Amino acid sequence: MAELQLHSVGKRFGDTVALRPTSLEVEKGEFVTVLGPSGCGKSTLLRILMGITEASSGEIVLNGRRIEALPPDKRDIAMVFQSYALFPHMSVRKNLAFGLEMRKVPKDEQRRRLDHALQICNLAAYVDRMPRQLSGGQQQRVALARAIVMQPSLMLLDEPLSNLDAKLRDSLRHDLVALHRQTGSTSLYVTHDQAEAMAMSDRIVVMNGGEVVEIGTPVSLYRNPRHVFTASFLGQTNLMPVEAGNRQARLPWGDVVPLESNHRGAAVVSLRPENLALTPDAAGHGEITAVSFMGAQANYVVRIADFNLKASRSGGEALLEIGARVAVSVTGPVSLLAETPALGRAA
Amino acid sequence: MIGLHRRPRLELMLLLLPGAGFLAALFGFPLLTALLGSFGLVGDDPALTLKFYARIFTSTVLLRSLATSLYYGVVPVAVTVVLAIVLALALRRHFAGRKLFNGLYKIPLKLPKMVRDPWGIGVIAATTWKQLPFMTLVITGAFAAIPEDIRHAARTLGAGPIRAFLRIELPLALPGITAAVLLTFIGSMGSFAIPDLVGAPNPLPLSVRMVRAFAEGDMSQVFAIGMVLSAFAFAVLIGYYALTSRVGTAKGDSR
Ligand SMILES: Nc1ncnc2c1ncn2[C@@H]1O[C@H](COP(=O)(O)OP(=O)(O)OP(=O)(O)O)[C@@H](O)[C@H]1O
Ligand SMILES: [Mg+2]
Image 1: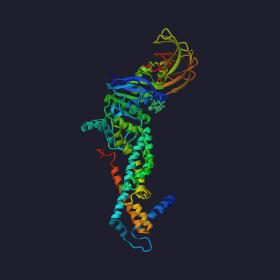
Image 2: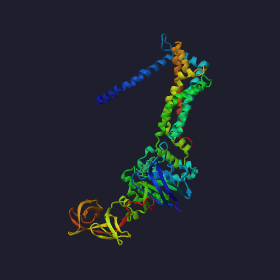
Image 3: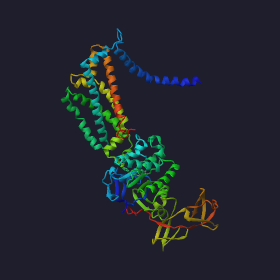
Image 4: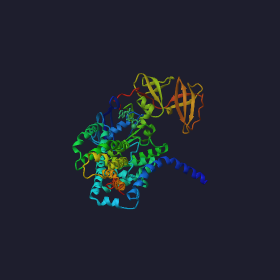
């Protein structure tokens, strides 16, 4: 049985629906990211799990136990806050020991867990500092260590890296993944940064407008998105109207590509920039209208059949010039997208 | 070079003058006069003497007055601070809070029954009533200033509401509570009107004795009583600091 199960958990504030009834399962040891734009209900979901906000409907099972009616201190869930939420009047050591004291963990076990957390979070040098004497990155590591020592059934992380600068965020992201591998904790990680979600997660829960749009591994969601929202939120893409039929799709400029669907009629597909091959060809239908060289890759905008296509090539290849005519061919898989997410019935 | 350093300093002095001068003139100068006066150094026939202090500490009546002053000073503040904290917390869940407020504004109706009782319940109730709004305002602010996440963090780390309050919220709100206690205590210890109106005729607090001595024109005695009152108020505040400096660091938290 999955470690965490949500059955139709929903929340409304008066007339506003913050979270449509959502069902979700997280396996033991899994690292699941909840990804979505601002205001889509991510924090609401976490607050319901923590027990700080009461769900309007649904049930939550953690480790075989119904928890939706329990207060936060009885849930065996640890939380890492975006704001760190360290206790400002306690040293790093006291911050880490607080939860263990509250749970009445024996003293020697406390010391063992504390030493371990200090070591894996690289905090040993700061144990006697007060939170205000630490940098943002160090404070976030303390917040993380404070959750790790609890050895909870479930770790919740609400955008824990969003207050840090890009470089620190990158290195802490790696630390987080490594830590998760070491501790094997079941984790639910909230972010609106798709790169973060792609890099860290076993699975991603894509949310929009208070509901789950789609759930899947980073690779499957990126390569075979089923919804317009997923395709455009994860990375760059070209959304193209097509005519479908006979397991094929006819693109606006006449090319026909294979399709893994029996759908007939008008539809929308997602074409990733890196799956469009550009070949210089004086008789080609496309014309380069913009070039940006990024180093590892070069990004192009190609004007074709009244559409502006985003395409990319390896930075090692010869650059194409603005105005050059090219032939465009599709090299990767093409997935048919559902325009609107199936309400409340997402996978 | 020196001039460059001196000029700003002079300007600073001039800028400080209105504020500091005001304090010096209206607070420092009377205090100094009172201090000198209490040693018999002010008046027609100045001569250094300790007799006005000796009078206080040898007179059972005045000693009992001192005790009464401390009682009227400390107890209402203690009662008020507890009530104000309860109110501040209740106001966070506004329903319970409203009920409490409804009860509160009826208190004055019950006061007449307690007038001039020997335990000074009337004085305590009236003083509390007078202090409560201010205290509640300051203390509500002190609790509201604690970020919500910190409270939630304590709860998810296994602290029930009471332990989260005692170990996290109370210590974090303490500076605000202290400010409120300090300001109201100074008021209640020296307060004259309430003990004079509803207090028992015997023992009288020092503040009332002071006014009586003033009416008799015994200025040096007034000054001495004032000094003793101030000294004890100061002592109580030091005691308060000693007590509260351990809040939140109690129970294995002390290093
Ligand atoms: N207490 C509340 N009362 C009314 N509406 C609320 C309340 N809390 C949240 N909402 C609404 O619920 C929706 C979801 O909010 P939530 O905080 O979960 O968003 P989020 O996905 O965490 O966004 P962000 O990425 O900006 O943190 C928002 O539209 C918000 O306005
Ligand atoms: Mg949020």
